Amino acid sequence: MSVLRMLPPVHRLLAQPSIATLSESLGHQVVAEGIRLVLETIRKELLDGSRVSISPEEAAGMVVAHLTQKERPQIRAVINATGIILHTNLGRSPLAPTAARAAYDAGRGYLNLEMDLESGKRSSRQTPVRKLITRLTGAESATAVNNCAAATILTLRVLAQGKEVILSRGQLIEIGGSFRMPDIMSASGAILKEVGTTNITRIGDYEKAIGPNTGALMRVHTSNFKVVGFTKEVSLAELVELGKKHNLPVIDDAGSGAIHDPTPYGLKGEPIPQEAMRLGAAVTLFSGDKLLGGPQAGIIAGTRYWIERIEKDPLMRAFRCDKMTLAALEETLRIHLDPDRARKELPVLAMLSADITDLENRARSLGGRMLNMGLDALVSVDHAFVGGGTLPEERIPTWTIRITPHRGQRADDIAKKLRTGEPAVVARIDTGKIVIDPRTVFTDQEQPLLDTLNRVINHRPDSLAPVTVSG
Image (cartoon, rainbow, N blue to C red; front, side, top):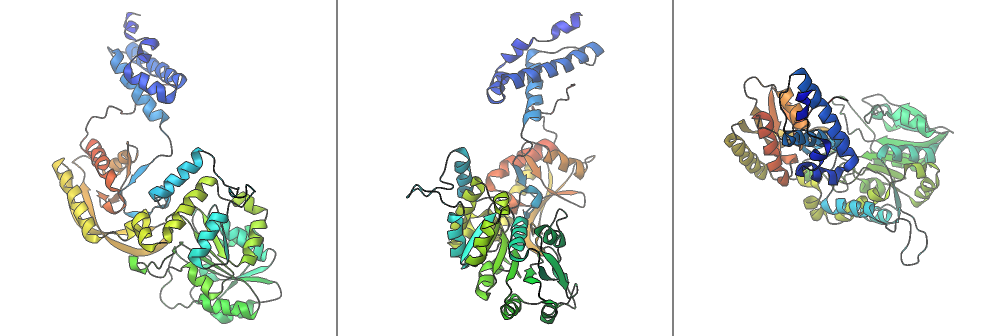
């Protein structure tokens, strides 16, 4: 049919500058397939009359838009404008630039993962992080696995497989994703023995429960919920003393990985591993990607006797960290050697300690630029969250920009377009308004954030709008 003569041939589209550039990054085969799909869509539109003409340039634009949407990575960077610092769904703690560089360098080439360069002989991949963890915590030895749940299973398996582990009922937590302490205990081969009640557990409850098959005593920090009112719990010092009396190891699950006292950041009640080691716990466990500010990891610090046995367990190989994680973790731990440097360079700690006046100034500057763009933006004092299952009730003072959608717009629709845009922006919704918290927005993300808001809310044309193709 004559109308189909308007269809540009594949070779002509391949010669278009925009498509030629795309071919360099995606490859000829992917681009050629994308062109065929778009041309088939255009062909149907010409035949059914929904389209009356098409130029090569317009078709090329459709191909670029289609391939940009289809071939972009599913896991990609986002701008976290929620004010939730340790956002579990957004990957928890961002890495320090030097830690991210260490992971990149480890991934792009070879490294002495399990080789001592001086002797040329095989070494342990745990040695670099072990030295730093023991230096920071005072533990005799330490090791790292791929997350804290793995650390818990491995520790329980080695210290108490086939034996009872005594734990307060008030500490039978679910750590997220339906992973519950009773299930972890069962997976490890240890036998859970609950004592006390949800709100009251005394040292006598532990002592009465000790029997010939007791393997360990355990404390789990209940970081993701609080019980208030008529409550009582046993201190770690009391538990360690009881363990010494009966020659039983004490396992301390500290959770958040606060290497330094977090009270200067306005956070209270977080255990630090140094205290567990000082009191005499056999093993303490904590996360690498929460208040430590590093990559996902589960750190096990404790006595040399138990760490050696943990590392010899067959599951250690299944749970061990890869080279990129270990490189980033080593650099993160090295930064922690200087608390002032840690506060400045680790994004989590920098966000927690951000000056409230600086946050106000940033919010007012962003709000003013939004007003100039025609957005209905109001700057106000607000609160942020630590997140990541840590200190759920702690609210941190902050300043936010609250954007009222234009007439006919819905906040939910805007939030979805922000999430699926380029760059992706994740914001809060509150009482029908889009809430932007600069506390979790890096300064170099401010302009891309504003551009995305302008494009989505003010309907600024986007040359890369998604194209629906058949097939």
